[in-house]
Length: 299
View (cartoon, rainbow, N blue to C red):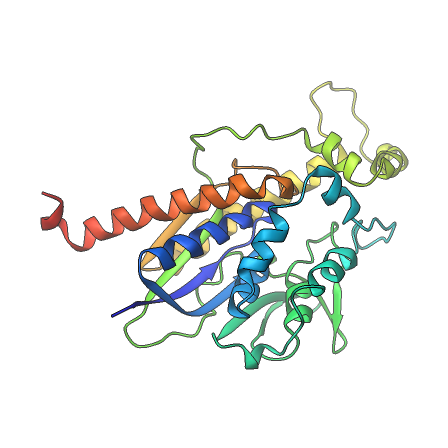
């Protein structure tokens, strides 16, 4: 008899590629994923898994090197973000067609934030790609999505690990994956300097933007952060803390944690390492969970 899992996948940029490894480990250990909810990158991985195309996506994302990632960035000088994200969705559509969420074989919920009305929006029907696009709209980084006249940004703004927004089934186990956990990371992955990496990612155009904005952020300190690094680090830390508090208020049956130190927000070229990090974290958490449920068997 398969063990049923209601799986919640959290936000966290490239760190969320670790969700793929978590899913693999759950399946290998005999769990059946019967429902999924996700925010931001968690919505991407969850939605693609629910559509039955995770292997195709994994093969593609693990094939990307730095140059490929650079080419997928469509830089814009919009006042609401610096990346449009059209290129990456266009590429994914080549091997994963869009479909309506309600037709997926697994119930799926994507979380976005209605920024004007300050509330969560839960996508359980309609275009899968529209829902995912809304959910990944990192404020001031990825331009917002407009759906039915509503201005939508990243679901992680209000609910980075949407434990409270998932369909439950009788007898299932609620498993949540937090990829921005404030815990040490055992294996150092050589996290790159964010300013240099993102400047390359945008073909040098970020530097020009930062120079124009520098008068707004004057500093003579050698250890001061650049505009983009300050923005991503500040946002990431806030989301990490919100996730921690949400999980304390809505504790899952099993929590799988991946350190926010595992990589930088946009280091998607480290996908293979991140998938493995997800497998390792899931395996460790499942072992601890099994011991907690059956302490007599560990003696």
